[in-house]
Amino acid sequence: MLKGIDPLLGPDLLATLRAMGHGDEIAIVDANYPAEAHARRLVRMDGHDAPRLVDAVLSVMPLDTDVAEAAFRPCAFGDCAREESVFSEFEAAIAAREPGFSLVPIAGPSFYDRVRAAYAIVASGERRLYGNIILRKGVIRPQGDTA
Image (cartoon, rainbow, N blue to C red; front, side, top):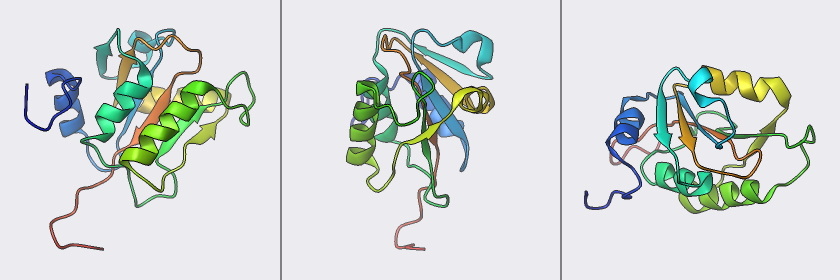
C-alpha cells in the first residue's frame, strides 16, 4: 500500500502508467475483448469494472491537453449516438478527475485498430458490452508553468 495511491493501482499497472510517455494511449477493455490477442503490453485486472479502473488511472495520469480529444469509446451496436450506462460512468470519472474532456465515439473497426495500437491494454472484468475506453496520456507541467 502507498499513501495517496488508489489501492487498485498495483505494481504492474503503476509501472505501465509511469513508463508511458506524452501522447501514448492506454485502453481499458471489457471482459469480452480479445485483450491477449491485441495487446502489445497487457495488464490483467480481472474482477474490476472498467469505470472503477478509469477513475483509478485518472487519479495519477493526466489526459492530453495538447489535442482536442483524449478519451474515446466505441459506438455501441454500430450507433455512435447510442448511450450505454457504462459510457455515462466513464464520463463521470473523466468529469471528476479531468474536467473539460468529452468521451468521443469512434465507429467500428477504427476503434479496435486504435486499441491494438495502444501502448498497453488493461483487461478488466467489465461484463457490460462495449465497456471499452481509450485514454491518451498528457503531461505534468513543472510547478509554476502555466503554458
